[in-house]
Length: 468
Image 1: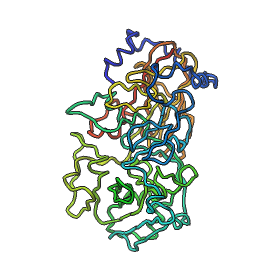
Image 2 (image 1 turned 90 degrees about the horizontal axis):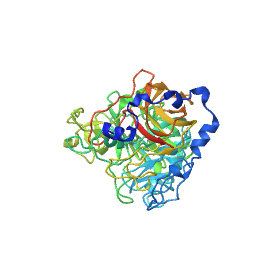
Image 3 (image 1 turned 45 degrees about the vertical axis):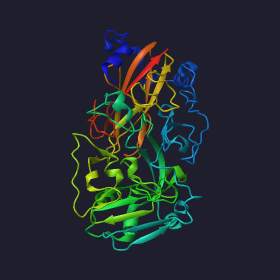
Image 4 (image 1 turned 180 degrees about the horizontal axis):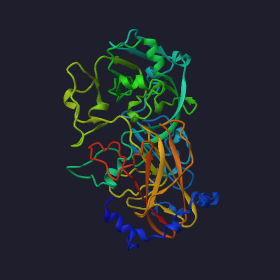
């Protein structure tokens, strides 16, 4: 958002820093359960002010929403934002749990979800995983029962779409037209969730197939999620073999999510799991792993999930690299790998500029969320997968940064933490910003460079709220 937008909503303050922050921040000792319940049970005035043409997701009413089924998906997507025919975002403003329930977990597909009753390649009875390549000693084919019998681990980890936060390239950095025009789905901040994943570590797989000294890259490949059932797809993602060697206990083949068999919309029966990297690296509906002495180039590290812009000079493929469904001319940017640190409040963003609004978003275009004034608590989430979260800072109307209260410990660097801001605002419009600091001491930046696909937005997010 630009200064004109900020000033339009904060014009009541001649000096943004003049807001009485002593009345806004209560401090940790001032937090009460009643304050939090007051925010959760705010009146219907917090809803969209105009009658919606179709049912919308709720705000401040426990994550309610009408049951909604779509032919592209298997699960009920009634609690998700309706982005398009193959993508559904999480309602982050209703998040309040540490583990994201499956019904609230976003879906990022290129094509409709493959169904076992139509395509036996994703039926656990017939599913096969081929592991091969010129950089292993012993090729292997696994069944679903083989996976269940192997030693497995569980890990709590964030999963995040590469495009999560894209809306803020438009709303916060005005990247709406040439030469800095960003395109793609308007995820808001809902392309993220945290789950407990049970998986067979890749260290176990590498031990069985025998890694050769010439190993350079591994390709996780689906080949299943095509435009039509039983067709071939172009979906997969490579990683350097160094990632498997360094993180062989963390990267693996996931077959359970939140204690249950992996749901179809999330990659059943088996998907790759690459914590810390963009979600596209955790290939769903996995049927092939190829470990080779060369690099791989596919849709999701060339024309998709690549930073394309003047700050991202593309790599140069080698003559012996392998190309699937793309050509060397499609290597046009820097592939998204590790996610950067992020933070967010569990409050809807004001969406005034993005090209297309989700049809069931709880606010109208340009509308501010409304909360009751007085003592309460705001909650947010922060994650820093490369190094882990050290702290989260918050500021109001451009004032001083103050530390938030973190309420979760981090069992590993890939998890998020919830944080709380006890506050007591007077009636009025406020700008609230959040900033995560990782354990290396790096802070979220104020701005991030342009990339055409709008990937990996990691700048400090701005939340406008009207307290009534």
